[in-house]
Image 1: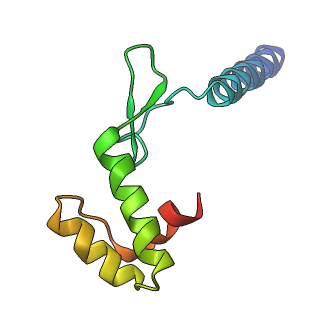
Image 2: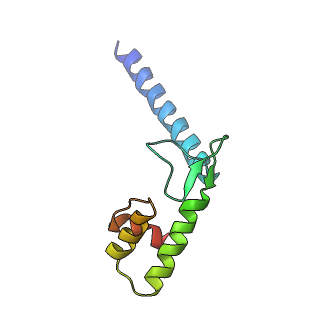
Length: 98
């Protein structure tokens, strides 16, 4: 039983390594790996790749312009909410830094 358990553990380690390698490769190719939603500004394409969402990309550009004019993150989040993009100020900060 001990030997069987050792082989089972070895196989689990190999499976974990293969899955990690595939996920790393898919991420490098720009594929959407799942989760609740694609990142703001993108949507998942038919082949699993991330495709820019024009409306959300326009909102990001608008947020960058407002930040360039010195507007606060809370102000920017409020203005984007009027357009239907409900984001909190922390999300706006992350969008502006990527």
